[in-house]
Length: 503
Image (cartoon, rainbow, N blue to C red):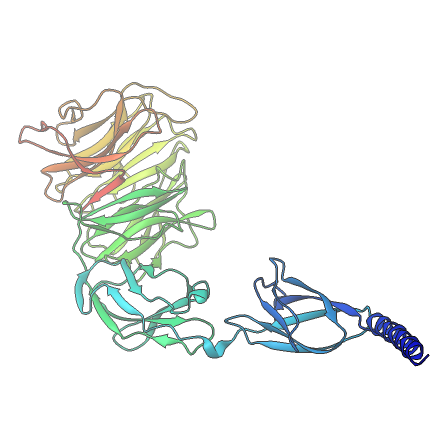
């Protein structure tokens, strides 16, 4: 009996324990924690962030879109932490209740305290105290941020000063490690420095280096090249050492040097009008000469003007009128008006000031006349008249007894003013005879010789030659004259160049 009672008590105790365990299992439940990690300020998702709880349950990493999900986490209070190198670790308290899904957003901030400043920029070129540099210099340096993640943030600033410690150029937010500095002034010493900035630390300054631009050159050749729809002027020696005198951003053409004035005059487009400008040989001291009366006529590219020998005055055309103006823009005076209403396109002033050569044409650029007048407007000599085809390119010899000009001997006329066989002709004002210099200097068939100019000593001639197709390259050549007026074979001086001047 006693044994039976023990057995019954044991069975009841077993059933009670089973019942209690089932009750406990039913009360121990779990929950889910989801969330996303983004960069503070930009809300950019951050992948590979370590997510873990304290007390410890699970450790996971955020996916490519910055999201994470902790499943089957026992209910309770937790500290949820987000951690990634380069960012400040952060945590949030989570109270996970029965069957609950909790959503959490982490905003991580850059850990600037771990960011190293960039090194001091190392200046490479030009070398310190370099001299005789051109007016365009490529500044280069080296600087690598030790924090690879900052490579996209690192930027530079260039500071350029003159000898008076005045800042003449400053450029910020440079992403490369070089900068092409142009429009420098001849004979000036420049001081330059580079500043590195990673946007986190204090900017780091390089040492200061200096270089000097060469002295003002005495270049005697000037011509134009084209950049897009604009002409720009180049100053050059005969051996090809050159610099760009005017920028590409403005249309500038027809350069003419006057050594007495120490100035180069040229035409420039201003608000749709053609005006005369002057500048010093180094491109400085730019001044507009004409204002109230622009340079006007048929086809702005063909328009031409002339200096007086002493460099005090300029002659220029405006439709059917010829004007004279002082180099400072004062003293505008009407010199001549055509009697037939035709436009004056080109002019040249003799060295002694006694003669002015004019080329006139109709509104289509044809019916060309070339004649010589005195300063009072009296016609002295008629060089060309009654010929079909285009003509132009006037230039007196030093003595004023000879005149260069060009004429398309094919006589071809078209709406686009195309020339088929333009030649350089030398007219003798004493004998009234003409010599075809192109035929004596191996002119290429199917090409045009244009814009001839005497050398300063009258012994040579420079000019532009190009194919008559109107689209080929234009080049400047030189021929040397003999005593008999014949020419030697032509020699190439400058490629892709036109409108030459030699003073």
